Image (cartoon, rainbow, N blue to C red):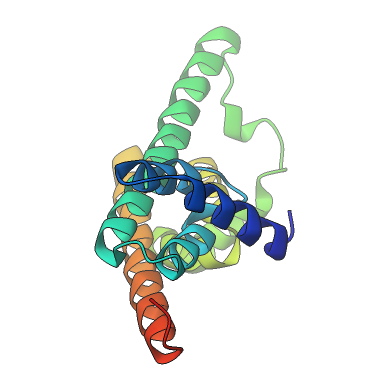
Length: 166
């Protein structure tokens, strides 16, 4: 999906919502990999939604998606190991790129840079493939997501106020 249709579709969906339903839409749209908080937060704030509530809803939606990815991978890997007696991540070298990023920047670097470079969903997948400590992965990805959410809310609010928009 390219940026312009994603912005238009997100904006149209949010305009159709009313009241608390708009924030529920922000929550749900932030869970979708093609939209994520990087699109939904500026669009929602541009449409006049409360920046703090928008940020909280988008953060909660993305954090829910990330948690689901991490837990699902952990359970799938455990099931696969029980079923076949082999480790899911050691079956081939197709995870080499994730491991190289991991070795170079570590979990903190991946969690902070990944959302802007690859999206939060792909970052979560890379983290669980390259690492093994589920709690640390969830913690760092939540921190990275929080940093980007605050930056997006602040940047969108300041940017729209400089433009004289709501």
